Image 1: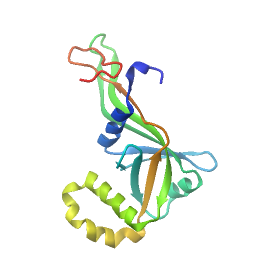
Image 2 (image 1 turned 90 degrees about the horizontal axis):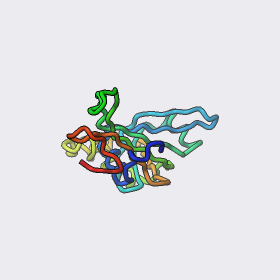
Image 3 (image 1 turned 90 degrees about the vertical axis):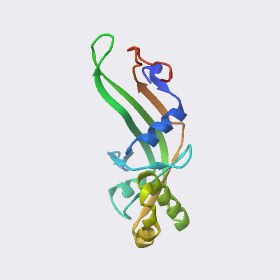
Length: 171
């Protein structure tokens, strides 16, 4: 990281992932071409993320050939004029991580992952979960992402006095 003064902890980075409405998942095909998609992921522990998709498609084809992925998320992104010098800048909170994917075959694990996804994105609609899963489990693929190294967080943020909050300083 070029500006180490903006680096935040792995724990902080995980919170950014939790707050992001979607996470960019980047991958590379067997011939090296890049491919990335914003996906609705849920995290269930310090190393495990989940998403679901259709049973076929370009994303799954690429992941079967090369299961390595790069995750990135940005929250609290806000362009502004620098409080001290009037420069044009951007406040942000970001997180990145590297992981490996696994296509989930076990039905009980699939259901638990889908439940975690629904609890994150539709917690007030859970009364329809069982019916929806029974209707669509056969046409749904669940993908597990296991981080292979700790995530990295980065932030540019100013306090109430216009001072940039460096070296992990919290509000």
